[in-house]
Image (tube, rainbow over all chains, first blue to last red; front, side, top):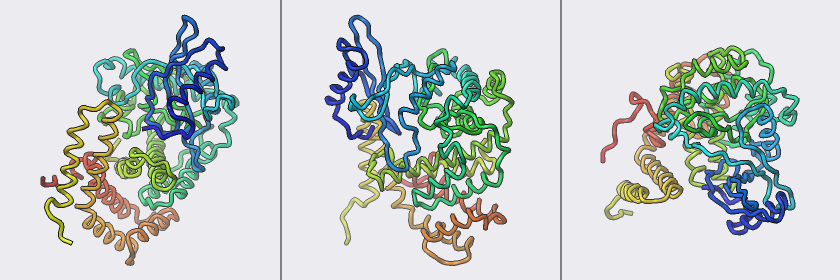
Amino acid sequence: MTESNGIAGEADLSDRLQQAAARHFGNQARVAPVSRPSMGGSNDTLVFDLTDGAASRRLVLRQETYTGAGNPYLPPSAQYRLLEVARAHHIPVPEPVFELTEADDLGRGFVMAFVDGETLPRRIVRDPAFEEARPALARQCGEVLARLHAVDTAAVDFLRDLPDSIDPLATQRQRLDAFAEAHPALELGLRWLERNRPAAAAPCLLHGDFRNGNLIVGPEGLRAVLDWECSHLGDPFEDLAWLCLRSWRFGRPDRPVGGFGERAPYYAAYRQAGGGAVDPGTVRYWEIYGFVRWAILNVMQGYGHVEEGRSSIVYAACGRNVAMMEYDLLMTLDGVYD
Amino acid sequence: MAQDRPNVDNLLATAIEDLAALSGGLPDDERFRVRVCTHLLSIVRRELAQAGDLNAAEQARLQDLLGHDGDLAALNEELSARIRAGELDERWTALSDHLRRSAIERLAVVNPDHLRPEDSPEPADG
């Protein structure tokens, strides 16, 4: 389901990756492609084995795919920096290995370590193999977010001027306007958000897409946090709330934290790890924001499919999925959904 | 032009049924793609059956809310602009009711399984 990255076919890609590996690790390094697991939102993903004599290591190539004018995602160089920062703060992420250079002729991207485990949300939510992982995961997510939100923002200065870091509400409105389709339910959400703004919080480093689907999980719990391309600075409750959106509960709406956990232990773990007390009203505010933001990201995919040549059956479906987020938004505003 | 049997609804239902049967035997990636295609065709089938009634109902509610006639797209543009300008803050409940109805109607076409049972349409025949 990945779009073509417009660079090379599979064989060509393999050749260039081989040359890149030789450039970064020496001439004896050999590359063997393993799989292409991504469904391609913002980046293409290729898993490959790097062999150097007797030693072998499984790695992942991430290449930028979406380079349109309205592209809301961070460039790969910023994602790479974030992996380094996260790792330095003991946040579990795949180890960044090297950035692609112009000589590699593979577009913009980087190589990181492969982390084994489950990422498919429905399996994480349902599979008996993760019975013990689920409650542990909710606590670990609270701890990881507390550590992330404590990072000195001077280390991520390159996020300071992003529209999302400056004014999230205005940014969502600008995005919605760019896609030229009337969405009165989203306007209602934006108007409510405007009239109910919580007191401004000191801006923190946010992951920006911290949810079930971007977590690598083993039977013991969380192994790595993926997909840092939406990272920005903002209210820590924005991250805390995003994981609780109904959109990521995958058939278990009764378990608000990612479909795998309860709110109380998640909030308690956040606080115990130094993240401060969690005000449920502020979380709710950012959940409303989350539905609006998630809906607009889907409006964007529908627009890209129809208007920008990023044609794909998945993006076509995304355009129509907006009705789901609007329904959840309105039900949450009415207090019917938690 | 009178077409012969089967009608459009039956053609789509038949194609959807066969694609669904086919998808079970495919590798993961292809099964996923066939399922998305089946989903898109199911939207088309429900939209062909329901769009006329649903659009008329939405238009009538919009005319009530905004106090004048107009085509559906123009009324939705106007509603969006007036919500943003804060002109409907005093009519929040009526506005929410309308938008909830509209979301339910769109979901009845796009993904009826996403609706709460109390918001679900009558089960379609056939």
